[in-house]
Length: 104
Image 1 (cartoon, rainbow, N blue to C red):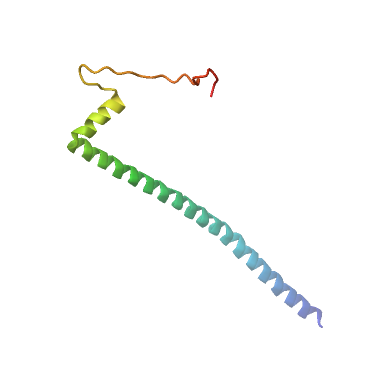
Image 2 (tube, one colour):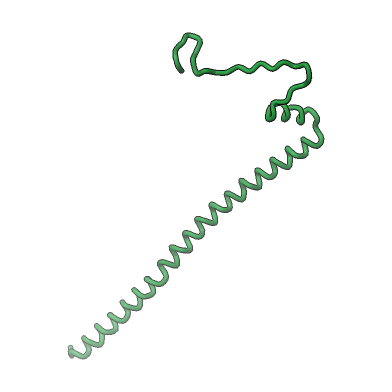
């Protein structure tokens, strides 16, 4: 073979390899960035789903507060500690000890 043919082929191989390396170096980071964005999107979609569920729950609770007097009383007693006039409330404090004197 002639030296020029070898150099010609080697040159084309080198150019082809350089083009492939260039293409890979450009697109691999873009693909990785795209995949990271897809992961973030999935996390955000889950957060949206949870927030929508919480909103639905709060709307249901709001509607019950408007329409159900027993629910209003339950919330007032449990969350705010309200009592009716004349009632006596007993609160029991758990000190972390069992009845036989040993810690749990």
